Length: 335
Image (cartoon, rainbow, N blue to C red; front, top):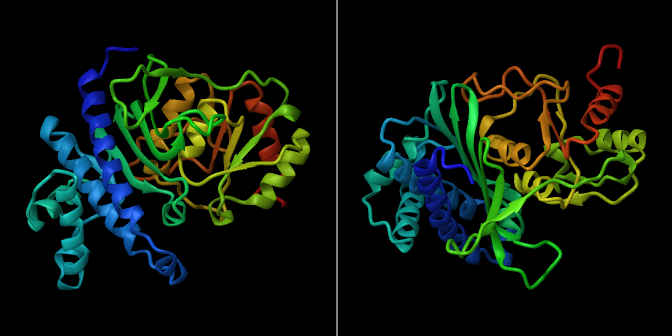
């Protein structure tokens, strides 16, 4: 494994492991009744608590590093947010981090940066809200970006088996990549275990490939995906899971293709929805571009302003996928 950015990698993976404990604590308390009422308060508590703990960890080791995150503490500081804030503080304390409400809010606000800088982190504390609430797949995504290039990508997937083909495999996987050092994964609860190097599939013919798609169609156009699959000759049932766990699924060979297709023209993807997973796939031998075949640009603050959608493959037939995406694009001229 690469020794570059070793201090950053240790601080970040330790923080993601700690945050996993909070996620599991909150998720375990979700009841069928709260799900029936579509109560999103558990994921809100987890979102804020994870951002607080990870921002605290980064701040303690790299105090000058900005963090572009999904949340801000403005609503929590208002009187209407007092109950939420109390629960967030309690979850942090349960994870072994004692803090005042003010300290927790300050940590969360460390992740409120929106502007680009030469070196920064980007964080999605809970990627896959509905998966979290269903007690299915969700991810903690963290990445370090230097001069617009991802140097570290980390995905914490607390409900993903370390070995998808073995139901007795440890539950909970953390995957990471350092540029030039390959992609690796490990049981999230066993930091002393030997990391496993991961790689994409060897599938070379698109008709033998398997899609990985969102469970929620609102995240990507499933109809568009179906037309693309037909053009590529793909007939296998898609592998549907929530969150950036899809990036890990491609990186370690559970699937060959993941498409994040725009559901409306002009939508700008958020960098935290992709940065953690992009490098994990690339260092595993795969390819990641937008739907036009352009590399994702992390120079534009909190969004991928110059990109549209995302195409993730094992790299063996990436151009064919891009061609199929463009052929069926509902946003193409004359479509």
